[in-house]
Image (cartoon, rainbow, N blue to C red; front, side):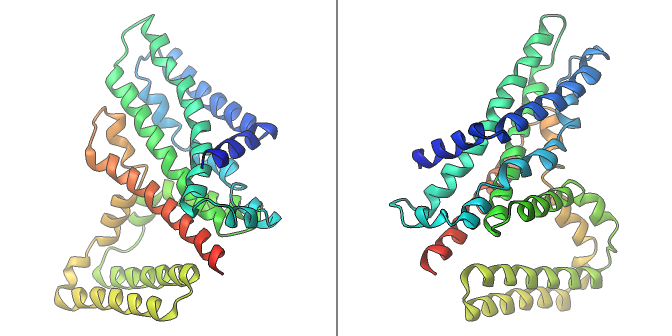
Length: 287
């Protein structure tokens, strides 16, 4: 895993991708820092962090688009698949290399509250709480980006799909609010989601009986709940989208609130998508 980590990290700085990512990241945060903190003379660094949470939607695809797709296209993934490392170590090595670049940027911007403290009072709890949330949010986007990159052999396709998915997550609550909240619409919505998840499962495991079995069970549970008490589905879409929204959970960190549920949520997102990426590699190894 360490060898993969070093190889991937080195590749970002032997090309321009790593430098471009860090430069753009610091430039965007710097602009917001000037307007939100310096010019307005506010010591709350969380104002800047909250306003630049969109930065992951723009820049993370730049890092993750090639990390798996390039290996697939150039067939160098065959070297990894036949190497004496597990699929989990391959994914973790790649994830940690991208995460290390993010932490490098975070380490630099973490000095901003300290600098401001030299000239005034800074609420360190909310400032560094927002930075911790920022790290977890970034890790979630990186894990999702790696998974999406593993599904294709085109960097361009990986970048476009990743950007679209990230963009949707940014506005999940707004999108959910525009959908009808009555129980019949929610029932159809969740039924479609089950079908989509089953298609993804089949694409990963290629086991038709397992996929159909899980699909039937899931649809049966959804239907049974609907027949028993359809009012349980009223407003369910908005509730589910709000619960799944990674950006909405960032609000607690912004206010200096450390909710264990939010931390577990982000860590779970990272684990789930790294696990899915591992399954994609395992499928290639045995196919």
